[in-house]
Image 1 (cartoon, one colour):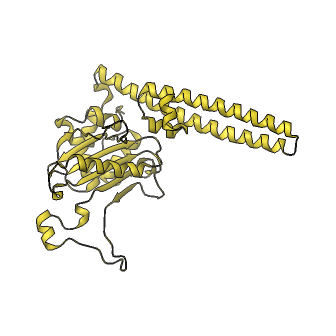
Image 2: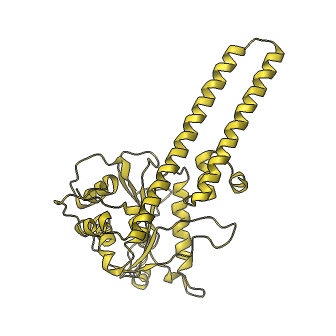
Image 3: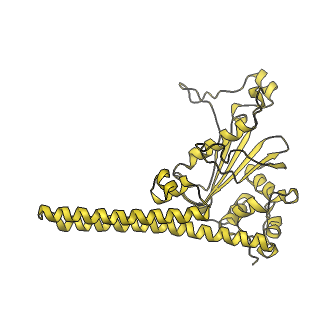
Length: 316
């Protein structure tokens, strides 16, 4: 079977040319169950404006033919506060594309498409959709609608047509036979393989465009570098988890063995544990320095992965 490059790399490097929009359009059409045509790929300013601004990685920001904005974000490593980042990302994009002095009615509709490779939240499905709806506090069957004047002025039917819309694809949760075009897309995102029998829009083109053998030397080197960075990140995270578990077990065993012994022995245990913690801390700092050199993660992400503060990562 033809070896294909990962979608998260392709969306940054290969799929930004107009001739290749068909791939992303195919995924969007399968997800939203209506034809989607991309007008242009945009550059987001939200990748850091000031030193103290929150980092918001936008993998791809597109505008469709109706002027609506589509954010693509792909996350490989676990992030506890990823929902918050989704909210922040849509807020930043809305503010960036509302020109100073424009009335609020010029706000663009934003779709946030998030592809995650870990279990985010609790639930059994592998695709979720989130919209904004106003429900009566005293009657949960009372849904607030736009007035007739608002519908005519804004060209939409409900508040949910104005507010951002979120799609969450939990790729690792997909473990069934592909029965729909969207299933075929998620199967590709999980396995990296596209069969010749697929019917989903964009996938046949993806099989050609994402063919690893068709990359030039520079693209191939960049792709292999990204893959090595991903492997290293996962190794560091798993090592940190394993070391943390082992350290906790060892301290528990020591505490059990030393209970009831002399005060001097207790002080010796405390000193030993302090030395172990210091050693583990120094190893974490060393891992942080290595990750910073690779440049694939932000200080915030490194801090979360290793259990450090952002100040500790900056000073590592």
